[in-house]
Amino acid sequence: MNWDKKDLLGIKELSKEEILLILDTAESFKDISKREVKKVPTLRGKTVITLFYEPSTRTRISFEIAAKRLSADTINISASTSSYVKGETLKDTAKNLESMKPDVIIIRHSMPGAPHMLAKTIYSSVINGGDGAHEHPTQALLDLFTMRQKKGKIDGLKIAIIGDIAHSRVARSNIFALKHFNTEIICSGPPTMMPPYLESLGVKVEYNIDRAVSNADVIMMLRIQKERGGISYIPSIKEYSTMYGLKKEHLTKAKEDVIIMHPGPMNRGIEIMDEVADGPYSVILDQVENGVAVRMAVLYLLLGREM
Ligand code: CP
Image (tube, rainbow, N blue to C red):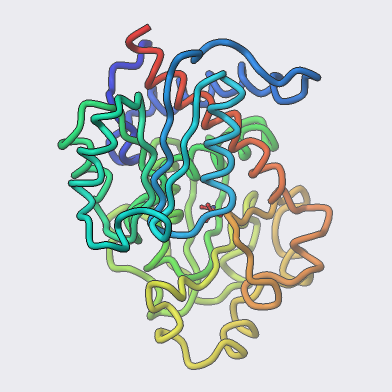
Protein backbone atom coordinates (compact mmCIF):
# COMPACT_ATOMS: atom_id res chain seq x y z
CA MET A 1 0.00 0.00 0.00
CA ASN A 2 1.06 3.64 -0.47
CA TRP A 3 1.13 6.33 2.19
CA ASP A 4 -1.19 9.23 1.33
CA LYS A 5 -1.50 11.22 4.59
CA LYS A 6 0.06 14.68 5.01
CA ASP A 7 0.35 14.36 8.80
CA LEU A 8 0.76 11.81 11.60
CA LEU A 9 -1.55 13.12 14.31
CA GLY A 10 -2.64 10.01 16.17
CA ILE A 11 -2.92 6.24 16.04
CA LYS A 12 -6.70 6.57 16.09
CA GLU A 13 -6.56 7.91 12.52
CA LEU A 14 -4.44 4.99 11.24
CA SER A 15 -5.65 1.75 9.71
CA LYS A 16 -3.98 -1.58 10.53
CA GLU A 17 -2.42 -1.51 7.04
CA GLU A 18 -0.90 1.93 7.69
CA ILE A 19 0.51 0.78 11.05
CA LEU A 20 2.05 -2.29 9.39
CA LEU A 21 3.44 -0.15 6.56
CA ILE A 22 5.27 2.04 9.12
CA LEU A 23 6.59 -1.01 11.02
CA ASP A 24 7.75 -2.73 7.83
CA THR A 25 9.38 0.47 6.55
CA ALA A 26 11.15 0.83 9.92
CA GLU A 27 12.60 -2.69 9.49
CA SER A 28 14.32 -1.53 6.33
CA PHE A 29 15.83 1.48 8.13
CA LYS A 30 17.07 -0.36 11.20
CA ASP A 31 20.42 -1.44 9.74
CA ILE A 32 21.45 2.11 8.83
CA SER A 33 22.08 2.86 12.52
CA LYS A 34 24.48 -0.11 12.72
CA ARG A 35 26.70 1.02 9.83
CA GLU A 36 29.95 2.87 10.28
CA VAL A 37 28.57 5.74 8.20
CA LYS A 38 25.06 6.13 9.60
CA LYS A 39 23.63 8.25 6.82
CA VAL A 40 21.67 7.85 3.59
CA PRO A 41 20.74 10.69 1.20
CA THR A 42 16.99 9.90 1.15
CA LEU A 43 15.71 13.21 2.58
CA ARG A 44 18.53 15.50 1.41
CA GLY A 45 17.21 19.03 1.00
CA LYS A 46 14.30 18.51 3.41
CA THR A 47 13.93 20.61 6.56
CA VAL A 48 12.64 19.14 9.81
CA ILE A 49 11.66 21.33 12.77
CA THR A 50 11.04 19.99 16.27
CA LEU A 51 8.83 22.38 18.24
CA PHE A 52 8.62 21.16 21.83
CA TYR A 53 6.53 22.96 24.46
CA GLU A 54 7.10 20.13 26.96
CA PRO A 55 10.39 18.52 28.04
CA SER A 56 11.69 15.47 26.17
CA THR A 57 14.82 13.38 25.97
CA ARG A 58 13.91 10.38 23.82
CA THR A 59 11.31 11.70 21.36
CA ARG A 60 13.06 14.93 20.41
CA ILE A 61 16.55 13.47 20.17
CA SER A 62 15.45 10.39 18.27
CA PHE A 63 13.50 12.50 15.75
CA GLU A 64 16.60 14.63 15.28
CA ILE A 65 18.85 11.58 14.85
CA ALA A 66 16.31 9.97 12.49
CA ALA A 67 16.16 13.10 10.33
CA LYS A 68 19.95 13.48 10.29
CA ARG A 69 20.46 9.81 9.32
CA LEU A 70 18.19 10.52 6.33
CA SER A 71 20.28 13.66 5.52
CA ALA A 72 17.51 16.16 6.32
CA ASP A 73 18.37 19.49 7.95
CA THR A 74 17.09 19.81 11.51
CA ILE A 75 16.15 22.78 13.67
CA ASN A 76 15.11 22.37 17.31
CA ILE A 77 12.91 24.87 19.10
CA SER A 78 11.90 24.62 22.74
CA ALA A 79 9.26 26.80 24.36
CA SER A 80 11.66 28.31 26.87
CA THR A 81 13.94 29.74 24.17
CA SER A 82 11.21 30.75 21.71
CA SER A 83 8.98 33.84 21.46
CA TYR A 84 6.33 31.84 23.32
CA VAL A 85 7.80 33.39 26.49
CA LYS A 86 7.01 36.83 25.01
CA GLY A 87 3.39 35.87 24.50
CA GLU A 88 3.30 34.58 20.91
CA THR A 89 0.44 32.19 20.20
CA LEU A 90 1.02 28.68 18.87
CA LYS A 91 -0.82 29.62 15.67
CA ASP A 92 1.40 32.68 15.09
CA THR A 93 4.54 30.66 15.83
CA ALA A 94 3.39 28.02 13.34
CA LYS A 95 2.59 30.57 10.61
CA ASN A 96 5.99 32.22 11.09
CA LEU A 97 7.83 28.89 10.94
CA GLU A 98 5.81 27.97 7.85
CA SER A 99 7.07 31.12 6.13
CA MET A 100 10.57 29.64 6.31
CA LYS A 101 9.37 26.60 4.32
CA PRO A 102 10.04 23.61 6.56
CA ASP A 103 8.84 20.27 5.23
CA VAL A 104 7.69 18.91 8.57
CA ILE A 105 7.07 20.24 12.06
CA ILE A 106 7.11 17.78 14.95
CA ILE A 107 5.23 19.26 17.87
CA ARG A 108 4.91 18.32 21.53
CA HIS A 109 2.39 20.34 23.53
CA SER A 110 0.45 20.01 26.78
CA MET A 111 -2.80 20.88 24.96
CA PRO A 112 -4.62 17.87 23.50
CA GLY A 113 -5.33 18.60 19.84
CA ALA A 114 -2.50 21.14 19.38
CA PRO A 115 -0.94 19.10 16.50
CA HIS A 116 -4.36 18.81 14.83
CA MET A 117 -4.83 22.58 14.99
CA LEU A 118 -1.36 23.08 13.55
CA ALA A 119 -2.02 20.61 10.72
CA LYS A 120 -5.09 22.60 9.68
CA THR A 121 -3.14 25.87 9.81
CA ILE A 122 -0.04 25.06 7.76
CA TYR A 123 0.84 23.26 4.54
CA SER A 124 3.91 21.52 5.99
CA SER A 125 3.47 18.02 7.39
CA VAL A 126 2.83 17.82 11.13
CA ILE A 127 3.83 14.97 13.44
CA ASN A 128 2.38 14.64 16.92
CA GLY A 129 5.27 14.19 19.37
CA GLY A 130 2.80 13.98 22.28
CA ASP A 131 -0.24 16.18 22.96
CA GLY A 132 -1.29 16.33 26.61
CA ALA A 133 -2.87 13.08 27.77
CA HIS A 134 -4.27 12.50 24.27
CA GLU A 135 -1.84 10.66 21.95
CA HIS A 136 1.82 9.83 21.41
CA PRO A 137 1.66 7.95 18.11
CA THR A 138 5.36 7.35 17.45
CA GLN A 139 5.79 5.91 20.97
CA ALA A 140 3.03 3.36 20.29
CA LEU A 141 4.55 2.52 16.90
CA LEU A 142 7.98 1.87 18.41
CA ASP A 143 6.35 -0.15 21.17
CA LEU A 144 4.57 -2.37 18.63
CA PHE A 145 7.79 -2.63 16.63
CA THR A 146 9.60 -3.82 19.77
CA MET A 147 6.84 -6.33 20.66
CA ARG A 148 6.96 -7.76 17.13
CA GLN A 149 10.78 -7.86 17.20
CA LYS A 150 10.94 -9.66 20.56
CA LYS A 151 7.91 -11.93 20.22
CA GLY A 152 7.85 -12.45 16.47
CA LYS A 153 4.21 -11.38 16.34
CA ILE A 154 1.64 -9.01 17.82
CA ASP A 155 -1.47 -11.18 17.39
CA GLY A 156 -2.15 -13.41 20.35
CA LEU A 157 -0.15 -11.40 22.89
CA LYS A 158 -1.42 -10.66 26.38
CA ILE A 159 -0.31 -7.15 27.34
CA ALA A 160 -0.59 -5.71 30.86
CA ILE A 161 -0.37 -1.90 31.02
CA ILE A 162 0.17 -0.73 34.58
CA GLY A 163 0.14 2.73 36.11
CA ASP A 164 -1.41 6.13 35.53
CA ILE A 165 -3.54 5.13 32.55
CA ALA A 166 -5.90 8.10 32.85
CA HIS A 167 -3.19 10.68 32.18
CA SER A 168 -1.10 8.62 29.77
CA ARG A 169 -0.98 9.44 26.04
CA VAL A 170 1.29 6.40 25.69
CA ALA A 171 -1.43 4.09 27.04
CA ARG A 172 -4.11 5.60 24.77
CA SER A 173 -2.01 5.33 21.61
CA ASN A 174 -0.90 1.79 22.46
CA ILE A 175 -4.48 0.70 23.13
CA PHE A 176 -5.69 2.20 19.81
CA ALA A 177 -2.85 0.42 17.99
CA LEU A 178 -3.17 -2.93 19.77
CA LYS A 179 -6.94 -3.03 19.18
CA HIS A 180 -6.17 -3.56 15.46
CA PHE A 181 -4.58 -6.87 16.42
CA ASN A 182 -5.90 -9.94 18.18
CA THR A 183 -4.47 -8.98 21.58
CA GLU A 184 -5.66 -9.20 25.17
CA ILE A 185 -5.09 -5.86 26.92
CA ILE A 186 -5.34 -5.55 30.71
CA CYS A 187 -4.92 -2.22 32.46
CA SER A 188 -4.02 -2.05 36.13
CA GLY A 189 -3.53 0.73 38.65
CA PRO A 190 -5.51 2.56 41.30
CA PRO A 191 -9.22 2.98 40.43
CA THR A 192 -8.70 6.76 40.30
CA MET A 193 -6.23 6.28 37.44
CA MET A 194 -8.48 4.10 35.29
CA PRO A 195 -10.28 6.18 32.64
CA PRO A 196 -13.89 5.34 31.72
CA TYR A 197 -13.05 4.86 28.02
CA LEU A 198 -11.32 1.52 28.69
CA GLU A 199 -14.51 -0.51 28.88
CA SER A 200 -15.88 0.83 25.60
CA LEU A 201 -12.62 -0.25 23.91
CA GLY A 202 -12.91 -3.77 25.30
CA VAL A 203 -9.89 -3.33 27.58
CA LYS A 204 -10.02 -5.33 30.83
CA VAL A 205 -9.38 -3.57 34.13
CA GLU A 206 -7.75 -5.48 36.99
CA TYR A 207 -6.90 -3.56 40.15
CA ASN A 208 -4.71 -6.32 41.54
CA ILE A 209 -1.27 -6.22 39.91
CA ASP A 210 -0.56 -9.93 40.55
CA ARG A 211 -3.67 -10.89 38.62
CA ALA A 212 -2.97 -8.28 35.91
CA VAL A 213 0.50 -9.65 35.10
CA SER A 214 -0.57 -13.28 35.37
CA ASN A 215 0.43 -15.07 32.15
CA ALA A 216 1.37 -11.77 30.45
CA ASP A 217 3.64 -11.74 27.40
CA VAL A 218 4.31 -8.03 27.79
CA ILE A 219 4.25 -5.81 30.89
CA MET A 220 4.27 -2.11 30.10
CA MET A 221 4.92 0.15 33.08
CA LEU A 222 3.92 3.82 33.11
CA ARG A 223 5.05 6.61 35.40
CA ILE A 224 2.67 8.84 37.35
CA GLN A 225 2.10 11.92 35.17
CA LYS A 226 2.92 14.50 37.83
CA GLU A 227 2.71 17.31 35.26
CA ARG A 228 -0.95 16.38 34.65
CA GLY A 229 -1.88 16.19 38.32
CA GLY A 230 -1.47 12.42 38.60
CA ILE A 231 -0.04 12.63 42.09
CA SER A 232 -3.33 13.97 43.50
CA TYR A 233 -5.07 10.73 42.48
CA ILE A 234 -3.16 8.56 44.97
CA PRO A 235 -2.88 8.61 48.79
CA SER A 236 0.95 8.57 48.76
CA ILE A 237 3.89 7.63 46.54
CA LYS A 238 4.94 4.99 49.08
CA GLU A 239 1.54 3.33 49.01
CA TYR A 240 1.43 3.48 45.21
CA SER A 241 4.87 1.95 44.94
CA THR A 242 3.96 -0.85 47.36
CA MET A 243 0.77 -1.71 45.45
CA TYR A 244 1.72 -1.01 41.82
CA GLY A 245 5.52 -0.81 41.60
CA LEU A 246 6.84 -3.69 39.48
CA LYS A 247 9.12 -6.00 41.48
CA LYS A 248 11.03 -9.16 40.60
CA GLU A 249 8.49 -11.40 42.31
CA HIS A 250 5.73 -10.20 39.96
CA LEU A 251 7.62 -11.65 37.00
CA THR A 252 7.18 -15.21 38.30
CA LYS A 253 3.47 -14.87 37.57
CA ALA A 254 3.98 -13.76 33.95
CA LYS A 255 5.01 -15.91 30.96
CA GLU A 256 8.55 -17.29 31.18
CA ASP A 257 9.68 -15.09 28.29
CA VAL A 258 7.82 -11.95 29.39
CA ILE A 259 9.24 -8.62 28.24
CA ILE A 260 9.20 -5.50 30.40
CA MET A 261 8.59 -2.20 28.64
CA HIS A 262 8.59 1.42 29.79
CA PRO A 263 8.36 4.49 27.54
CA GLY A 264 10.60 6.52 29.85
CA PRO A 265 11.40 8.57 31.72
CA MET A 266 11.38 5.98 34.51
CA ASN A 267 10.82 6.92 38.12
CA ARG A 268 12.95 4.16 39.61
CA GLY A 269 11.75 2.85 42.93
CA ILE A 270 8.20 4.08 42.28
CA GLU A 271 6.55 2.32 39.31
CA ILE A 272 9.54 0.06 38.57
CA MET A 273 12.35 -1.31 40.72
CA ASP A 274 15.99 -1.37 39.55
CA GLU A 275 16.02 -5.18 39.62
CA VAL A 276 13.33 -5.20 36.91
CA ALA A 277 14.37 -2.13 34.91
CA ASP A 278 17.93 -3.43 34.58
CA GLY A 279 17.04 -7.13 34.61
CA PRO A 280 17.14 -9.74 31.83
CA TYR A 281 13.50 -9.26 30.78
CA SER A 282 13.79 -5.53 30.26
CA VAL A 283 13.60 -4.27 26.65
CA ILE A 284 13.46 -0.61 27.68
CA LEU A 285 16.64 0.40 25.85
CA ASP A 286 15.60 -1.65 22.80
CA GLN A 287 12.50 0.55 22.68
CA VAL A 288 14.70 3.63 22.55
CA GLU A 289 16.90 2.10 19.84
CA ASN A 290 13.88 1.10 17.77
CA GLY A 291 12.45 4.61 18.13
CA VAL A 292 15.07 5.91 15.70
CA ALA A 293 14.13 3.41 12.95
CA VAL A 294 10.42 3.99 13.47
CA ARG A 295 10.84 7.78 13.29
CA MET A 296 13.01 7.42 10.17
CA ALA A 297 10.13 5.45 8.65
CA VAL A 298 7.55 8.07 9.61
CA LEU A 299 9.65 10.93 8.20
CA TYR A 300 10.32 8.95 5.02
CA LEU A 301 6.65 8.08 4.46
CA LEU A 302 5.40 11.63 5.14
CA LEU A 303 8.06 13.44 3.16
CA GLY A 304 8.55 10.76 0.53
CA ARG A 305 4.96 11.19 -0.67
CA GLU A 306 5.99 14.26 -2.68
CA MET A 307 9.35 12.96 -3.94
N1 CP B 1 8.80 8.32 25.81
C1 CP B 1 8.94 9.66 25.74
O1 CP B 1 8.10 10.37 25.18
O2 CP B 1 10.07 10.14 26.33
P1 CP B 1 10.50 11.67 26.32
O3 CP B 1 9.50 12.42 27.15
O4 CP B 1 11.88 11.72 26.88
O5 CP B 1 10.43 12.15 24.90
